[in-house]
Length: 460
Ligand SMILES: Cc1cc2nc3c(=O)[nH]c(=O)nc-3n(C[C@H](O)[C@H](O)[C@H](O)COP(=O)(O)OP(=O)(O)OC[C@H]3O[C@@H](n4cnc5c(N)ncnc54)[C@H](O)[C@@H]3O)c2cc1C
Image (cartoon, rainbow, N blue to C red; front, side):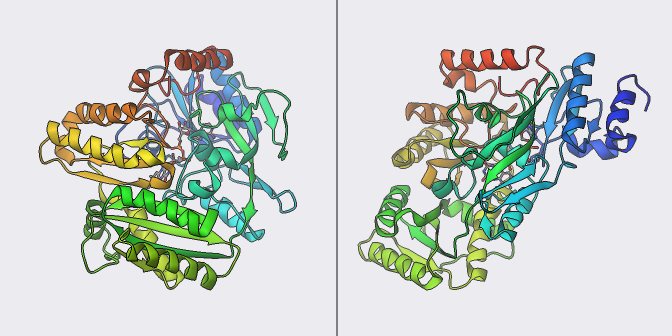
C-alpha cells in the first residue's frame, strides 16, 4: 500500500481488503444499469462494525468521503462515487452473518451485508417468513434495502422494508456506534431514530446490522394471470378481490401488453399465458394460512364472477408451483427486457393510477408522436414503472422526464416511489418537494454529518 491514507486503512481491515486494482474495483465504480461511472481511491471491505467505525474515523481525519455499497443493484446511482472529492467505496459484503434468530420474538438480527435471499432462507429455516421480495433478491443486501426502503412485490400485504424493522445498528459520521438493536414492538420514548437512517441512501451513516421482523409463514399461496381491458379495470379488480378474499392479496402487479412482448422476445423460457392478445394484465397472488385448495377455489370464484360481469377478459390460475413460477418469471424479466428506454418509478394514490396513465400517454403522444411506453409495476401500491421509448429517446430524456413528472405532480404523486433519489433525481426533487421539507432534510444532514462526508452528491 503506497499512500499515507491507504496504509492505515489496510492496518484496519487487512491489505487484502483494500482494493485498488482496476480489475477489482471497476464493478464497484459503476451502477447496475451502467448509467453512472465514478472514481474512488479504493474499495474497502470491513469484516465487522468495529472496523467500519475505525474506517469512518480515519476518513473523518483525512477528510475523505464514504460511499456505502451493498449489492450495488440500486437504480438511482446512490452507490456509485461521484468523484468530486476524495472518496472511498465502503463495501459491506463481508459483513454477512445472521447474528441471531429468535422465533419467540419473531425476529432475527442480520448484518448489513447479508444478501436478501439468505435472510429469507434464515427465516424459513426457523419456520417463519421474511416478506421483502424483489427481482434483485439474490444480490441486494440488507443494508441496501434498508437504505433505499425497498418496496418489491409484497408491499401490498406486508408494507415496505421500513415496516419490517425493529432495531438498527449504525456507525454515525463521527465514527461512534449507535446500538439500537432492540426487538421492541412498542417503544414510545421519543423520536424513532431508526427511521432516520431507513431510506437515507447512506447519507446519514452506515447501517451495520438490523433487527428484522419475521412473519408467520403462509401455508398456502395461489397465483393467477388475468387479462384486462384497461388499467381502470385493474384497480377495480383489486377492490373486488379484497371484498371477496380480504387481506390475503399479497401481490397485484400490472403488466402492459408491450412489456409482455418485450419479455417474450428477450427471455426465451417464457410464454404468453393466453392464446389471444390482450392490452393489459395483472399478476395476482393470494397468501394465507389455509390450504391451497381453499385459496384457489376462492380466487377461481372471484375471477369467474369478474369475467362473467365483463370486468376481466380472461384468467389463468397456476395449477402448481412450477406454473406459478413461470408467471412470476414473466413479471421478473421485465426490467431486463427493456433496458434502454427512459425510466420512471412513480406513485400516485391507487385510485389515480388510470388517470396517471391516461394523462401521461396523452402528453407523451403529443410531444413525441408514435412513442411507445412500457408500463408495469405494483399497481396495488399505486406504484408504476413508467418506461418510455427506446435508446433513440435517451437524448431527449429530460424532456420525457419533465412530461411524466409534471403529470405525477398534478396528481399529488411521488417521483420516486421505491428506488430513492441517489444521483438520478437529486436535482429534480427540488421541483417537487416543499421548500420547508427540503430545509428540514438539510437541517438533519448538517446535524448528523456536518462535514458532508457521508455519500456526498446523493439525495440532497
Ligand atoms: C432487477 C432489479 C429489480 C429491482 N426491483 C426492485 C423492486 O421491486 N423494488 C425496489 O424497491 N427496488 C428494486 N430494485 C432496486 C434495488 O434492488 C434496491 O434499491 C435495493 O434495495 C438495493 O440494495 P443493494 O444492496 O443493491 O444497495 P446498493 O445499490 O449497494 O445501495 C443502494 C443505496 O443504499 C446505500 N447503502 C447500501 N448499503 C448501505 C449501508 N449498509 N448503510 C448505509 N447505506 C447503504 C448506498 O450508498 C446507496 O445509496 C431492483 C433492482 C434490480 C437490479
